[in-house]
Length: 176
Image: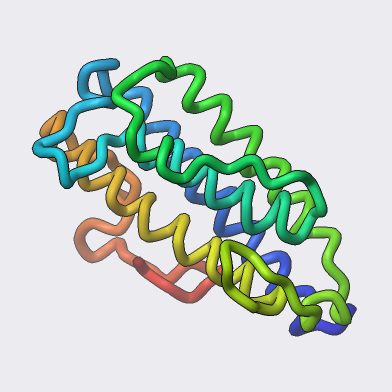
């Protein structure tokens, strides 16, 4: 695998692994009522977003790229009003991310350019990975924001950047 291909695969898998504990932290700060709280019918609860992330990652990566059967019920992800406990949601998400990371890590440079049809879209494997990481990131941000609103707590993920101590990360060069 070339350096750029390897970097893309490692970075993509790494981003999913980086966001997972942030969602788990949020789940750990919320009550069951808060996990399933909605401000209105057009809004999603944190629980819905976790189910949705599991469904999306499973459909695009584990089934679409990994060849497993696609059993996704997208409408059900959003229709749920409970039914899964906080530990169940966390375990389901961790299992999904772990499976997806393994599928992503197994990709070859040739495979990254291979065509896929997922959810009615014609994409390459690279595009599917990029879609999932971007989608996961967007909903992670929503879960973090909802958790801050529901708990009034600072989640502390960037506390180390406060004041003049902020320095770019050696790995990414970002200060986030």
